[in-house]
Structures are given as C-alpha cells and as structure tokens.
Length: 361
Image (cartoon, rainbow, N blue to C red; front, side):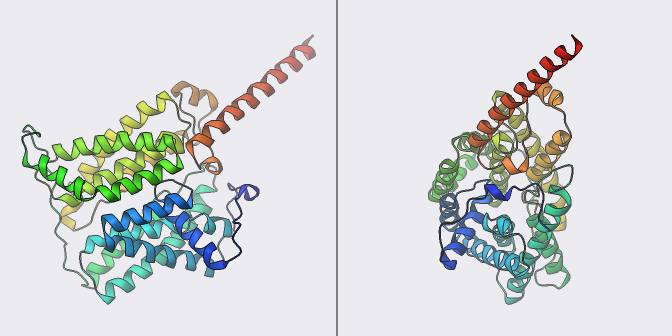
C-alpha cells in the first residue's frame, strides 16, 4: 500500500542507470534523513562525520542502512520511499545507538540485524497507519527507538549482556561551571571530535542555511547545559546534543514554516526537551535502558499533534504554520511553498467574496 500523502510526480528520478550507483545514492539519502536533510551530499558528509566521531558507530550505521534498504526492496515497499531513504534512516540511527552495548559478539550482531529489519516494518506501519491518516503525523525516529529498546530487552532476556548495564545518574552542579574541571573536560571532548562535528555541520549547511542556523543555536545551548550537568560521563553529553540539534531542525522550519515566532517556540521546546531528557534519564537509568532521543521525538510529536487538525485561524493565532509531509524537504522550499499557498488562498478568498457580493446585489 502506498501512503497517500506522497505525490510521486514530484519525485526526483535518479539520472543514474547503474544499479550500484543508484543503491549508493539511496544509502546516502538515508543517512541524510537522520537530520532532516534530503541531499546525498549531506548524507556523505554525515557518514564520514559519524566515522570520525566513532568508527564503530559508523560501521553499524552503514551496515544498518544497507540491511534496511535491501529488506525494503525485498518486501517490495514503495520505491519512492526507499529511494529517498525513508526506510533506511532509522536503521542508521539504530547503528549509532548500538554502541550503547560497548561490546561485540556474534549474538549481538545477529540481534542488530534483526532489529534493523524490524525498523522497516515499524516504519511501514507508521507510514500507512499514522502518516497517511487524517492526522498526517511523521514517524520521526520512533521505529529506531522502539527497535533499540526491544533489542536491549532481548539482550537482557537471553543474557547477551549483564543486567543492568551501568548508566550514571545525571546531576546538576550548583558551582561556577567556569571553575569546574568539567569545563576543561568538555572543551577537550569537543576538540577531540571537532572534525566529525564540522563535517556534520557542513552537511546541514549544504542542505539548508535555516537548518544550520538552528543547529548553531541548539549546539550552543547544549554546550551550556552540558557544563551545568557537571560530574557526568561524556556519553550523556552526547545525548543532549543528539536531542536538541535534530529537535531544533525539525521544529525550526522543517515541519513548520520558518518565521521569528518559530524561533521562540523552538527555544521553548529545547528547554522542555532538556527537562524531559533529565527526568527520563534519571528514571530509566536504574533499569539499564538508555534514554537516547526519546525526549526530542516525544516533544516534536506532541507539538505536531496539537497542530494536526488546527484551522488556519488557529495557526494565525500562534503565528505557526504546519506544512503537509509532502512539502517537508528544505525550510527554504517550504517558505516558497507557503508564500505561493497563501497567495492562492487570498486570491480565491477574494474571488469568492466578489461573487457573493454580486449574488447579493
């Protein structure tokens, strides 16, 4: 079944006739979709950046992308969705999550392969039952998150890893963070990963300047928050960046039309996401389950639900305009679409008003 929210006439058909090159293009687009980007060049930069940040995460992400893409093709899922990476990006995210186990075994590898296949089924369920419904809600990263927690549960159940995996509790320091040793530690951490960070930032900038603007804001805010969360292990700083950066891109011009009001709402959403992350992490850490990017997904999904059935007057009140999923490609193209959409709306509204006045006369 093909989701009805997609217009296949607008799909950019690949000029490549070589199946291998077409497959590589699909893989790169899937990598780009992780941060709401569309271009394969962005995906290439993301892939190299992921390898620079963690070679293990890069290998798992690449393997997950290939498994999910081949699975979707084997199941004869919609070629449009496959080719733009919709069926692959959740498996790529799963590959990044998988380093949570911090160990390697054949059993965990087979479990990872099974969970990558599961992301395809979960993505298809969301597309058919949620995205194509009257609510028109995206899957975001929920398929990868559900698959990861199922994978963690199975790993514990079959004793593939000790239960529970130790996860430190997050604490908030009350001292001057510029005098805190974590200030220097975080600076060292960022410097050591500067290459990967720059590559990922370049990938976002290549796709959209608006997305890059929100990336810079959220990255700065995440750095300040990480300094306040003194005395915590470095992996949890990662989770703060992983939540705030994609959340700001999603709300800051991808699912909504970019304007000055969206900047304010996105900032509020970042504060809410951070609070939710802190609470969820400290609740689930004792059970050995990582919070990952659940907070960002939950906040974005909740905001989209509020505007799912909103009228134009409702959107005007908040000065926040949600766009259909078919339009969600680049914030700049969304701005152009919105301008044309409003011009058409005003044209037909004025035309109907004139006809009503003539009929009344």
